[in-house]
Image 1 (cartoon, one colour):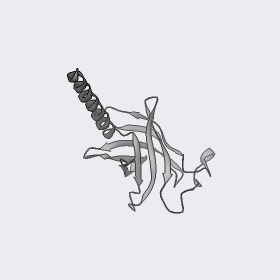
Image 2: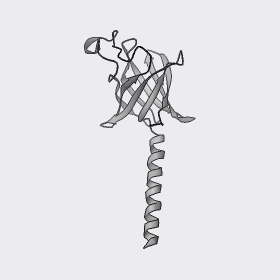
Image 3: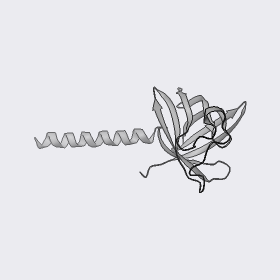
Image 4: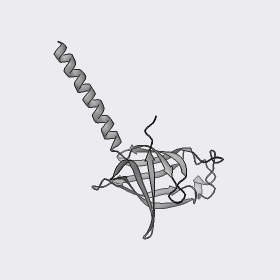
Length: 149
């Protein structure tokens, strides 16, 4: 009987470790956004899956004085709406390279929407690469996984 309990305990520990490792290898989770030009932390974004597609929304803005910022440069129904809670990536599709691509990458500071691509940094799975495209020009930010919750 002790043998079965020990085996079950080992199996449970193995499963928990596998789940933790799988999460560390995923684009899904909470990320600290960092401005690629200034290096300043801007916000906390949750990247999640819905119906097999990648979605992302802003959970928190980190800049002093901008905690309750509105999207003043956004167009249409997003104009003057709170940045906090705003969906900034919608319906990005996975591909065979481990990337997610989509047409709806919103930059609340400029109010513009871009084509986008998201992937884990191959050298550090706790860094997320987020690239926005305008024609053949692009800009890439590196976001940092939040692990201390």
